[in-house]
Length: 231
Image (cartoon, rainbow, N blue to C red):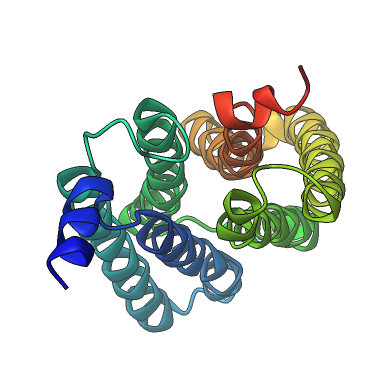
């Protein structure tokens, strides 16, 4: 028993489970955005307020998990991947939750409602960004398996395929964002300039959710542990 305790203290508590839970909570915040856009389109601000609170609740939970991971992440030499890589991963996951919260704050703070002719396309864009976040979560959920097999074998191929799909999904959101900005540009003269500015801001932040989710995948596969398998 004493030997087991010594080894436990030496290697520290595995941070992988909390990191996976952190991404799950961040994704929970993101997945509420389509309903918030629907409430906005219907000018249902009571529903919007409830969704806003749920998004902020998830973001606070993500913050709490982030602090816990940072506080308990072992400083020994026995982490399976560099400590700095895991900290970067948590920071990028946290950015996903933060951006979802910022979108909700902006929409609800200004009672924003996109022009009716854009609403379906904006919702489709939002859902595509949410799908990208969900795909990043799927990849993160394989992290413990990757570590178990030493970033090698069939598990690596599985995750590589997930990350290729993640990249394709993020590229799709880029194209949707460009199309929406082009549509908005053509409507600028018909809309209040301040509204146009904030519409563009929300579109930019929605695209940021997808970009940050894709970056989570990149961080997952640019650690020294992953790179060592290619040498």
